[in-house]
Structure formats: structure tokens, C-alpha cells
Image 1: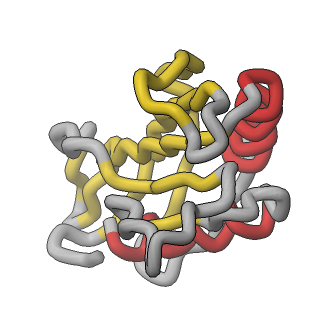
Image 2: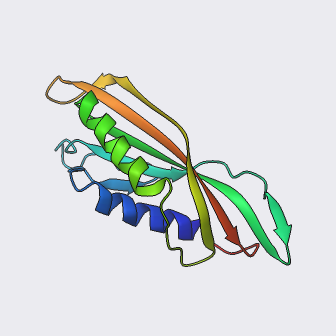
Length: 142
């Protein structure tokens, strides 16, 4: 999973240079020194793993889920960013340091208004994109 998360993080950064608040693994760190984090920004984290699809000759093929959560003040911008991420991963190859990615499919997506407001008083929106990667690897590999 670590190999997949690192590869996904690197591809997301290169596919979405307009993420002025950056990408973060897991939770987004708090604002520093009272300066609000620029928007849009996002986090990438793993979803609970499924059971291996099959196990042959010591190699497992298993589905691994990744969630992208993006925050910003423009609903349309977030929809466009989620579309860029989908295009960067679904039906695309991805090199892993451990294992081999067989395919990536979209599990689901949503854009909704967040109950919080930006420092400027603007509405804050959240986009969620869930992808599933089918990865072949030896059990115990990262």
C-alpha cells in the first residue's frame, strides 16, 4: 500500500498544479501562525483494503482504495480538479516500486458544500473522489 500511496501522491501533485494549498497524506495539518491555508488543498489517504481477489504461486491480486478529498471555494473548480484526477488515474498505467498495478477504476465521487466558511466568509466546497486500484504483489510487500 505504501508504494501505491507514494505513486498516487506524486501523480496527483503533477496532474493538479493549481492546488495552491498543496496535497497532504492523510490529515491536513493545521494553519500555521494564524495564516489560513490557501485553497484549493487536498488530502490523499487509503481506504480499508478488500480481500485478495486471487492468490496464485505466492502472488496476490488485491483491490486497494484511495480517497482524494479536495477543499476550495469554487464548486466548478473542484469538479474540474476531480475530473483531472480521474483522467490521470483511470485507464492509465502507474509504476509502483513494489508490485504491479493492473487497473484503476472509479468507485464514486461527490461535490458538496462544507458547513465551514473560509476566512474570507466564502462558501467552502468539498470534492471526494474514490478510486480502486487492482494491484498484484507478493504478500507482505508494501
